[in-house]
Length: 202
Image (cartoon, rainbow, N blue to C red; front, side, top):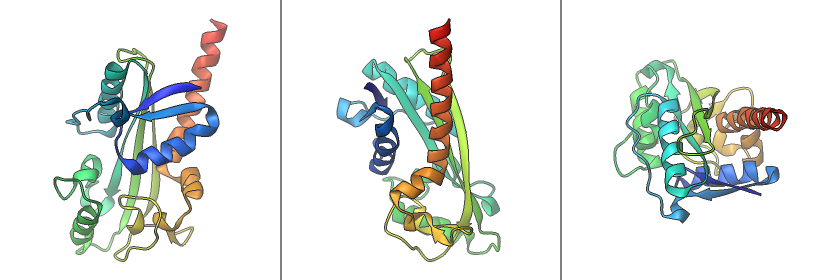
């Protein structure tokens, strides 16, 4: 079993990644369990922030690292809250306050379209010259009334029209198959397998 440090202390993300990676013989260790502080996230793109977090966690742990940067982008708000999703309403991070601010910002708009974004970065080491980087999107609508008990973040307000459910109404297993994070991880695993196969042939 390969140990990977996860560059996140978000309990919801930790649960999702542990569930997604456990069947594939990866042991996911949250960076907080290793005493690693969160990295700075000063960048304007999900990819740059995820790469910074992965390199930081790998440097501090000496292990391979996996990092994601994700958020929700409302179309009527020119992509806000975007990379600021986790702290949209300010510090300390608070899901209820973030959701309330988003609903208020969208109140004047008819367009309630939005998408979740996930950028995943895997590095073998802190100075890995070839990080594996993937991105995925999950499209839906932002609704005013929360529904569901699962998930975290904006999930109770993120409605998937083709399912007639919010993300928070999906079981964790179902969400992990179709979500932005699930899609990105599936592609990441393909890339990891390709790289490992090519290394063995080299």
